[in-house]
Length: 303
Image 1 (tube, helix red, strand yellow):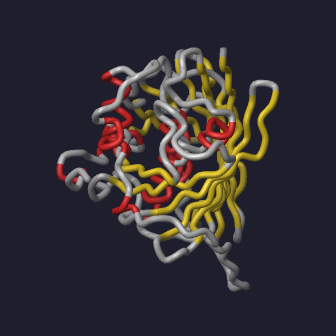
Image 2 (cartoon, rainbow, N blue to C red):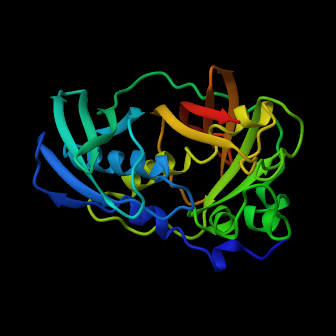
């Protein structure tokens, strides 16, 4: 097993993605800009847009309400290493709930849109979805860097290998195994991924630590959510001719916890047909507290 990756890798890519600069609005009530982060693909990483939009929406709410849901569409590919303008429309400010629309613009066109809802919270019953499966501890599993260190194949380049290994801000460890070069494990519509920041998340201007940690979940969730569909279809990421893209995305935040330890991201494929696939995911803490639920549809094109 490799040494602790936190000694030589960093979570700064994520915090840079959600560091916003206030701007003059052109369309709605508030505006911010954010810089898309490097990745070895022709377009920016989808979670980059979701997390920046979440940060923009949260910065528009100043009465203590907490983000509890987001519903997103990815409209156009976003350029890498370029600014996206996030315009926030204040749709509603209520006593219990508030709603924001966020649109991301680049090159004069909308590339992303979402609705984000915020809740004040109130007394009520509590129910936690149960984690019924037994999975190995993350310390027993290889990191992406360890898995890829001596492996090559398909469309995997040195740049993409370096990105999968340490460029995503989070250490990720798959159960039953990754789908980078081949599908490790059975071709089943289910997997789990342990995720943890490579090092302590840095403060982000304009966000509380709790808000930053919610944004961290929106950022990291998109990397692997389509993998249960790829797994059951026997389509590893490095398969020649494979093209994927996020289409739409929904996320619900049930409770807040610091994102500073391992979280288990349990994922299931729901459907695949007509060049699209849908997966669901649930984030759990190590002591099985259910933090958030994700549903995402993506384009899956395999020539």
